[in-house]
Length: 471
Image 1 (cartoon, one colour):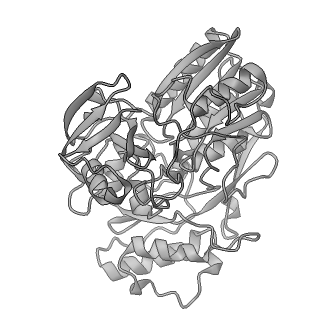
Image 2 (cartoon, one colour):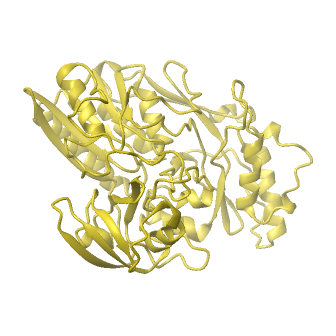
Image 3 (cartoon, one colour):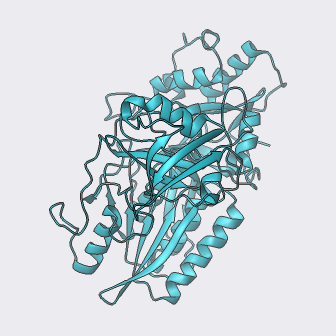
């Protein structure tokens, strides 16, 4: 499931127009404990809920990036559980230059749920049962009454049924009320049900009824890679959906894709991160090393800074150029769901390359990260470090603005060169200017407000430092 962490983080931000699939991934070799952790070891394991709350606050006062802003009067026992405590401490994350608290991410989850996540299996984070799985289907309103398939995991029930991005949904469980006013019904049927039936209209106009039964499945973050030839220029296109997952597979895929691009003499690369909510820093480093120009080899990639209690844990990372691609610029397709490790990649490349962003909105805005801390039968994730690039830039809590504003063309399948965002990138590469909104190269979709929907679960997964995972 792609975005269930968001529920646990309670970062639902949008109100009318979008629905997305839920996805769970993790690094199956993450618990390496390469460095000591900036946290005291628990003196004992307890299942007492009140003592667990006390410990949650104790750790937060120690490692939270804004620990010294948590008031002495904060009463952890007045909150229901670690999830509520983590949510409550966010209000104390005051940064210079920002009028409101910047932390939207500190969270907690049960160890059993984290272990489930660690397997990289799609499954449901429900309060009663985390084993049933889901359909592997994400949906999105591109206009009132026009609900489209936004994403599909290929090994999920939806993927195995042959469903594709861009298909229009006209009926769910017998109901033709496919409107934003019926969002609760749609969310339950798509994300929370173990069985649902759908009527789809395919791009060719044919109609098909498909019944889906929820299941667990293995996820694959590389959705698509291809090479286009436009006016004698070779353009590599990569759809990468998560920095979480089986790193052995992901690194193998990176190597395969980059080698293919190089063999085709690709001069420009478009990386589609529109639904990529982040993940592991180590995976970001690997992709950055493949994309960065050769001249950046051995130069500073980024710095991680902890609070003033733990300056000894600050780290500096340098580029180790991989592959034979030698790009001077790179294009990223983004949305408000492009978060965390995705933004870290963008930020780290900016000092060394011409980085162009294309999409409907700013990116999510998360220049901070965390690592899991065990407390009883919970893991807590208080924001614990911030990241900056070689230029010292890293305070992008408002997200990165786009260079070319283009709607998320959910009425097109992945890799369709007439899809709004991809078309804009291709236009710039071939002509030196982005596609204007008045051009007829690709229709402008009559979007429902794209940043305003309780139906959507943004693709936030976090920036997780695997080097600080506790055993």
